[in-house]
Amino acid sequence: MTAKKFATLLVLAATVLVVVLVPSVALANMGPHGGYISNTEACAGCHRAHTAPSSATWVGANNATKSALLLSDATTVYQFCLACHDSTSQGADTNVIDGVYKGTLYGNLSASVNPTTTLLSGAFGREDPNRAKGALYDGMNNKVTSTHLMNGESWGAWGGGTLGSSATDTVSANGNKVELLGTGDKIVMDCGTCHDPHGSSNYRILKDSVYNVRVGGYDPNAPGATPADPAPTPFVISREKGFPQGGFALHTPYSAYQPDYTSAKYAIAPGGKELKGMSGWCTGCHTTYMTPASQYNAGDGFGYESVDASRTPVIRHRHPINVALGNFLVLNPVRALVVTDSVLPLAHVDGVDGTVGSGSVNNRQDDWIECLTCHNAHGASTVMTGWANVADPANVLTADTGKGGTPPTNDSALLKLDNRGVCEACHNK
Image (tube, rainbow, N blue to C red; front, side, top):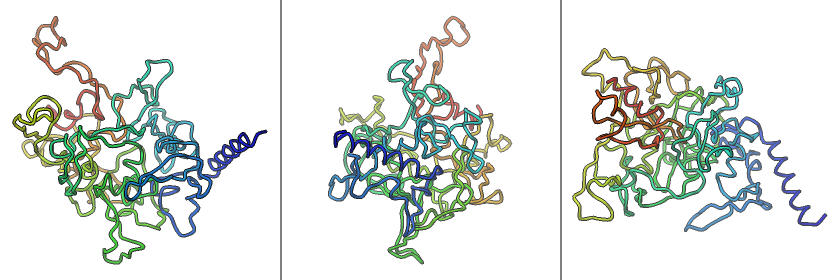
């Protein structure tokens, strides 16, 4: 046996050994993803200080490229993450490619018992060798119709910046100064764009800083905090059982935390700050989408276009978010809180029906509408078919011809229900 073959086998054997030794329960902000204490062994589950075979890198201070010291042959971040979060992995029950939960932890529905059990975030999807190349499907064989990118490709955030198309400094909807990340300015999108594998102050290890936009973090100057153990200042929290009211602190294990991957238990941010919550986090990139109106280039030919700056800018109006659902029941207060059998998740407030960390998620009229009320975070398999109107609805010969109407987009825009059913779920028209 040659030395090269022996070295290759040694690396493979070490990788298999680590997969076996890594605990089968890997939880966000627990296990290998946070909750580290001074004698933690979690580092060795992913890294090797002197013998890391992976060529994956990260960018440090002064844009210096450095090795991630990862234990695998992965060349990219998403490949390394899928070593645990894919259908064939042994490390995590959250299969983000197929969008299914494979365990029974804490009462989460199990895909082994109910194969239609889906993760809250949806599926990124995988190609089926027996179907058209490029088409993606989830674990229930539904075609994935839209996703956030996760494989390291470049992407521009819709609604990024003031006009969504230029690279200059501005202030995002959550009050942070940010370089415009709109449709004309691309950013790298992979698992590490949104999630911090080492943990964060936020729900689901959502990063505390996204492209230098603060969306959570730690404050060493807070009362009782120290530089070594700064106080968490999360943007995103939940009502999952045992979720810490103030977010996840450093060097603190959370044995009471029971994450729920199959039912929505999002909560309003600490202090009820309207610019925080999941929506405040999303506006780290989608900078204009929390504001009621602003000038914005949507690439649809109306008003300001980057190719013709002489055109008159057009004000774009947006659906309000981080507002109580009850704000829209004033004119007809007898309408039900939810009017269809497809219940959309709201951001829950603290109140008589439970608090953060209680596990209670009863819907109330003072719960908030937020980004994840209508959209999935990873991907969606909903369909957008048919035409918005027809030339003569009374004439069956012209029905669904689309004459004079709006054609289907065939892109689900990460929406939770087919054909913009998210609108009817609340508005009951």
